[in-house]
Image 1 (cartoon, rainbow, N blue to C red):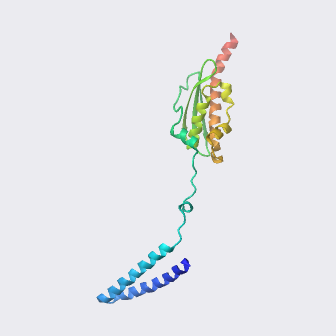
Image 2: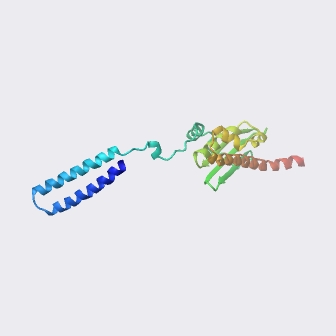
Image 3: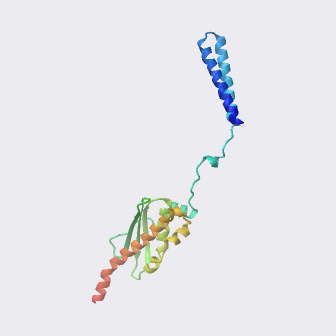
Length: 200
């Protein structure tokens, strides 16, 4: 019904507009008065149509938003262990990994004591909130663990803890790869010590 009224009003509007154009060519105050009255009627008709037109809810007009879980937001707004360690130190392992598909880049470093326990961890990440949260959680988890225990951390554990959606699982995988890269770098630095011990 609203659509029919709108079509009818459009026809009436075009007729009245044609009348206005004819009246504009005529001289005299009467012609201007008639034209002004016609314009007024057009405005009233348009306002009435707009008021009667159905309105969509705000939810239907806007695209669905993807919200981060509160754990991701917490690690994003309050990241743990941000920074760098001395990569030249023999007891520091550095892992630098990236995901070409999304452009995330993650650097994770660990510091290991003489007993093989990770006493410190730092990260720097360029990426989305999920990547930053995964890095932050990874450094939190590896601290206090031995090198062997840290090696067993799975990306599924990180994703489950942060409640990552399927589309963001690659961020947890990136964190896992960063941990293993840092552990591998640390182990590589320890090989000369093993060789020296074997010679003795």
